[in-house]
Length: 305
Picture 1 (cartoon, helix red, strand yellow):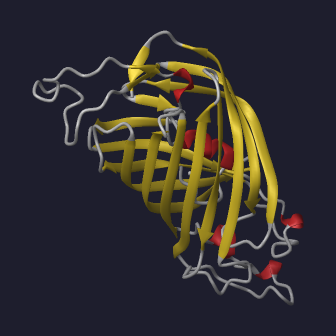
Picture 2 (cartoon, rainbow, N blue to C red):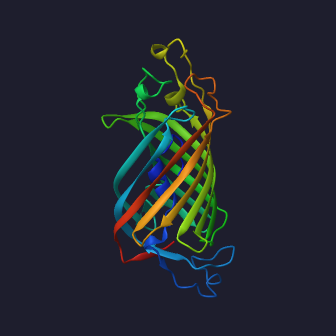
Picture 3 (cartoon, rainbow, N blue to C red):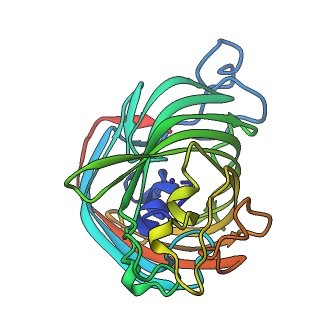
């Protein structure tokens, strides 16, 4: 979602985007000189660098919010926020909260990762959106599916450059029912810089393309007969390209237990398969958000990042 196909729960998405914040990390011992020769887990292209050790699990509170577009290509933004307990588990084959939400790892080697992950998105009250007034509300969105990541800079914990391709099934819910809304295909590229200026500051920049299929685009751009108005004609949504999103973010370990994060996301919807929809209102959107993570408990047992 941390991609972000339907304007993700932005503050939580930013939190997930920085899985390696230094507030609870421990410096690992320097690798032995022959580590790359004996087939260790650190073997791989590029110079060997010290790796961080992180707690196997953490428990705490995370909260944040932002000024977010109502949906892709909407011309209206609203303030949304959320605060909730969080847990991070950095297991060998299953991880929660350590990048891209809960996910199971099927492949995790120095240059390649294949996982199954989840994302989520805020609901929209159609009565608060001029283009959708009188239409059904947009419920919370949940999505789950596999993601393939090619690590272009393995064995380099300071700089990370990844190519990714995510395939997600999407469901909407108002917590009284669950409805299937189609699938998304999201290719992307992400760059992370850890320990910026030798500090606990981390930076991320990403570009994702979004493609919607199997009625996914209907959820945002379809206008049914019952929803037709003078300035909102009937429209049948098309499958295919939705748009692209550019994400820029920062994360700072203010103390051993507190992480502050924030960023912006620019949506570029020009060229969308549904530009002719009356619900397609703006070719560019801007989201701004941030928040804080407070770790209450962390395990003494650590794992190498």
